[in-house]
Image (cartoon, rainbow, N blue to C red; front, side):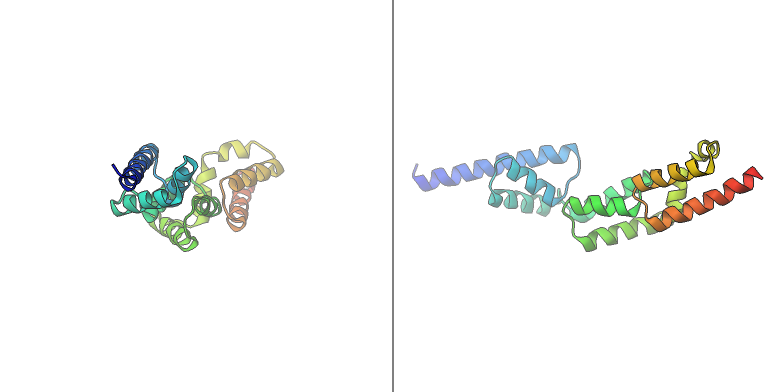
Length: 172
């Protein structure tokens, strides 16, 4: 075997190993193209090999950033998460800002709720607990809970106002 053939064989072997590793990663959970690329490079595969594997997986439809974003947003909406936390996490995963915004807006349209409605659903089960607390303590706990869930300041303020109106009504 001449040196050229050995080099080509080694490259093909590395591509096969990288592809196998990428499939193992995808078997665990869906990932973005950037995540797979970074993991392959971190594992020691070169940038060219990582790019080649990612392109092949995209062509075979194992990697699709739009489908990943859509499924990820749907999952977070079921968990009653706000737009801010979704936006931040998807951008960290390497998705383009326009794709992130479009996917989040599409997700909210699909559930036919705005962020206020989703925030209210997030605290609805906890209302009896909050009603037992003083107004100031309930206000802080609801605010902190919704902040951790990634809701916008406007949605949080609207929910707090709605809760306090109902809280006052039921106390009287």
